[in-house]
Length: 301
Ligand SMILES: NC(=O)c1ccc[n+]([C@@H]2O[C@H](COP(=O)([O-])OP(=O)(O)OC[C@H]3O[C@@H](n4cnc5c(N)ncnc54)[C@H](OP(=O)(O)O)[C@@H]3O)[C@@H](O)[C@H]2O)c1
Image 1 (spheres, rainbow, N blue to C red):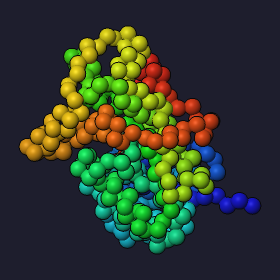
Image 2: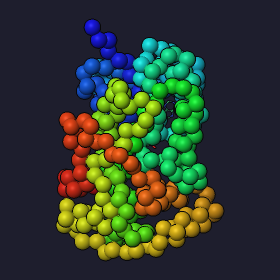
Image 3: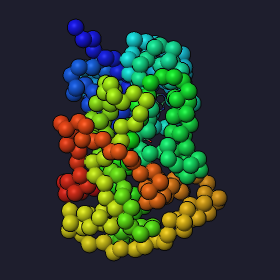
Image 4: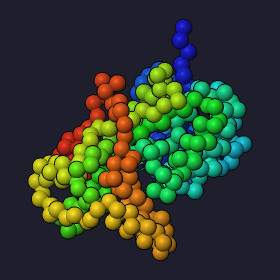
């Protein structure tokens, strides 16, 4: 007799976390616990999500990553913790608390809230948000918990909001030579890969890198034009070194991280520094991830 794995999802009311809960339940062989800050949530959107998760078969448990005492009961009897926490104030301290509770409760595997480019290849300072992923990963490594990272490049869902596109001015802009490969995956597909990663025995202490599509900026422009029938003016914004200097200048005078962090994400991609290695999307042939052409053709942008 095989016992079902129990998977706890932190951040279950979040955009990605909710999709991960659904993808885990779709597997049909997992007990899924959705962790939410409050079962009597005052946010109507969250209440709807709670009802939907319950109706689909998830058990709802309360837990706040900033209140460690709430995490021990949430992690009791759990085999795998999947974090989809998405709040920068809690990314590092909250996930450290979650790792501590998981370790105390004998959890077998921990998937941190990454879902990004390969931040392990970046230097501290390259991206303020991804620096936090690096800190959590270092903590996870020294915790001796088994980990799996899920790395998917950029979410395809936000592709036209990236600094490459200036649709207001029908312009496509890029730094460098426009020939560096960039990885994109939809949030739906990322959630499906997470659902595989929780129980794949060969993913202990390693990363699952996946991409629905890998395109250069120039190919992305052509794909957008073919899919939407809209021509964009191409504009070079300078070299990668000039982009780095622009970010440093902006950061020196910025009043908030939002003023430059999207360019830092772009830098990690167009410089090739955060490029995913050994993309393993095809290890799960039943997942047919969406390509950029399919995504843009369906009017999702
Ligand atoms: N690669 C990309 O292009 C890309 C783009 C966007 C996001 N991401 C990454 O994807 C991950 C998920 O992002 P998202 O957009 O899905 O986030 P989100 O929608 O903002 O959801 C964040 C979740 O964290 C929960 N949370 C916040 N503080 C908490 C606390 N103290 N205790 C317990 N739960 C708490 C929120 O709960 P409440 O509902 O109670 O607030 C919510 O469920 C993040 O790592 C993010 O960086 C990647």
